[in-house]
Image (cartoon, rainbow, N blue to C red; front, side, top):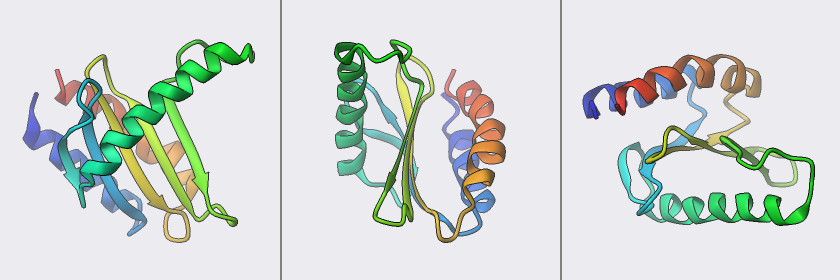
Length: 127
């Protein structure tokens, strides 16, 4: 793992979201512990790691026509959807979590520019 590159990519993500990134972490799937982050939240990493596992199990049990395995989870929170939680599986060992203030960051920039640009480079840095 190239930790310097991972941290640089997280900083680049923060710039791309124009002040809308509240927190971001790359964390272990096995332990839920952060390996790199901006305004890191160890408790959030551990809890959202468990939540992603539970969402996958729930989808399988529900019988909904959804793929067995989701690589991204996006949750909009609040009455106006002003906060978004994004958790993306990077590989078999790591996830990337973000808390985004949607009053500052545009959703289109997040899903069409920042994530597609950063994701392959972040995956490469973790090899």
